Length: 74
Image (spheres, rainbow, N blue to C red):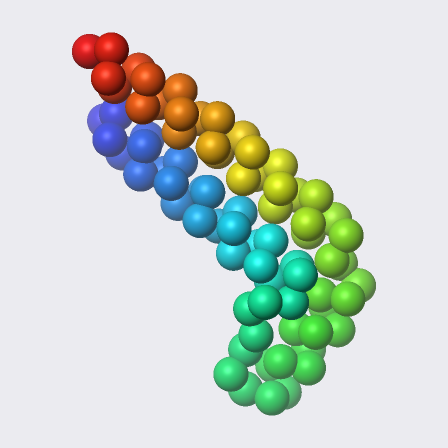
């Protein structure tokens, strides 16, 4: 069960990194129409997505560190 928690923390960390990369414009869609819609959405919401992504990344990095410490203590 501990490893499931570790996996979920890692999934949320990857989600935070993906959200940050999307908010700064590094991730693009393959379809030109979807790319245009994503760009409009990104420009409207980039500020709060960056803040949210950085918060998720920071929290999950601390959680992973504490989880590894807990696993190594056993």
